[in-house]
Image (cartoon, rainbow, N blue to C red):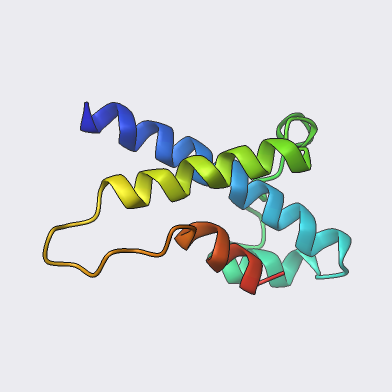
Length: 96
């Protein structure tokens, strides 16, 4: 069912986003800059609660990226170009 796929996609994307926020912060980005890049108000919480980070090991992130890549390949429109095999992973890696 497409709705279930979409919910799974959003959850995976949220986990990848939390991992990206964590990555930026440990690399020295300020919380202000990260909030600004996400369009968040300075008082809003970042999407990287400690409980979520504990489940975001490299292996988990790899699995999530694989699922997102698979979802993109399954759900492209017939009139669109065929997406690369690792469209999401490639996009994430270019920003590391």
